[in-house]
Length: 294
Image (cartoon, rainbow, N blue to C red; front, side):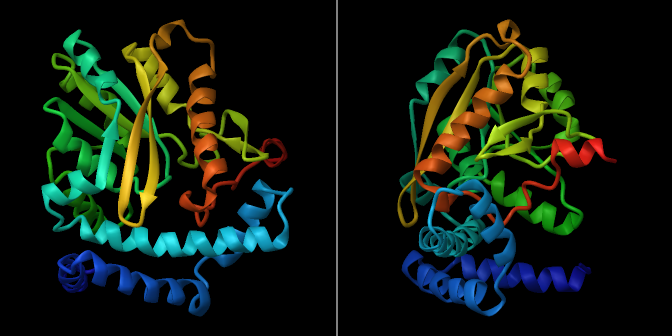
């Protein structure tokens, strides 16, 4: 994307972000129609993912989940744009944390914490909201984008209220930088590994799924307690993030125990309300069989 195009798009997104929520959701209803019926954005990917994940459901049930997903996807896109200009009061009202004392108790004892979540609910508001709740540093690990201008825009949105954005490959370097002060390291655990990184598969949503071992590797090195951020949608535009204790002493766990633990937490959320996970993502690119055949 060239600079001129980026500036035009940035200006349009900023103007959209200034819209009040009722108008934003009217726009979302139109966006849903565009995504679902007109351009049919990744409809084949979503349908296949749902069918493979829920073979016990009828065609009608799967179609209902698919439609609800696209309605939510439209909301998520515009809520993410709203992040550009949303006020601190609005984000605190609309994204509420429960059990944050699980973090603060560790901070008081001089321990940093690793927090894991997934592409479920409004994960884009999480880094914004938690920066308002904690005085300790929040380090949010992200996967860099090919378009550096757009990556810069996304990072400026996510870090508006103090969170520090950390490229995935620089995670340990940044953690070492803050090793002398308690902090929370936030990781998204359901990214798709590359073919070379697909070293471990687990049963997730009824199919063998390659899982990043990054959370586990970092936890073994840091020996910090692990919590899970379970994001629930209360109603349109309102979320609750429940902090759950996952592993207190990662150095005492068995191989892959941590990976299994955070993957199963995400799966629980998806099974309860499947429409709030990112079904348009090509999550199942590899299987143990096709890797063996390479």
